[in-house]
Every structure is written in C-alpha cells, then in structure tokens.
Image (cartoon, rainbow, N blue to C red; front, side, top):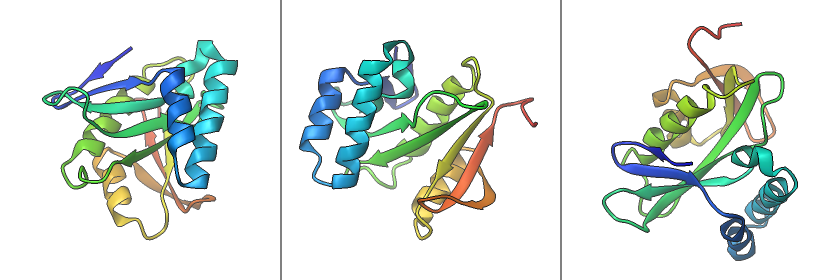
Length: 158
C-alpha cells in the first residue's frame, strides 16, 4: 500500500524497518512506542496499517525520508489516533501537513473510522498549526500529552 501526494510517497514500513527504528531510537519513550508498534504488526498482521510507522519519502529524492506518521492502533468506537514526527532539516516546508492530510483522508475511507484524534504537547505551536492546517479542531480536552484535537470525516458529525 502506498499513498501519493504532490511531493511525497507515504507507506507503512516493513517489520524489519520497524525493528530497526526501535533498536536505533535513542529516546526511551519513542523506542518503547516503536517496539509496541512492532508487536502490534506481528500480533495482528491483518490490521498492520494501524500499527506500523508510515514513512514520508520525498518523490523528487528517492530514499530520502522526511519523517513518519502512525496510528495508535486500529479503530475503537469509530476513532483512531494519529501521531507524527519530522526529521531534522525538514521542518517548515509543509511536508507534515501534506502527509497528514493524505493519511487522514485514507483512514476516513476505512471501515469503522468516523473520526481521527491527535494530541500535542501544550507548547508545541508548530504541531498545533499542522493539525489546524490539516482540518483538525481542538476538543477542549487535555490528554496525557496535552491538548486534544479531532478531525471528522464529511457527513460524520455525530
């Protein structure tokens, strides 16, 4: 599976690549997250897209990955949660907004998905701006990481 935008190819990485992400990650929290994502890929291969990291590869520079996105598991109660991050040197170029729009558009066409949720750290104005540009709105709630945002599919207001 591969999504294509004007400037990006977006696709779930392989189990081997997931393992490498987990093993090479220096941040303990991210290492734990990548390890849990890999476990989900291995334990639930039929739902792999909801557990895997999705690379954002530049179309005009094959092999150059600007960052990744992921879902935090399969749909529950009509909702999925998305997470994302950019690599150094790729911030401020609109890549994340472009990728997030494409991944969310795909997710909202999948069975059982009515809305997409996201959280940011309270002071992460750049991430909050990405969410706003991708159509997310604040929920007024605060989760473990900070303010929560939601994106509803067209005609999915309830």
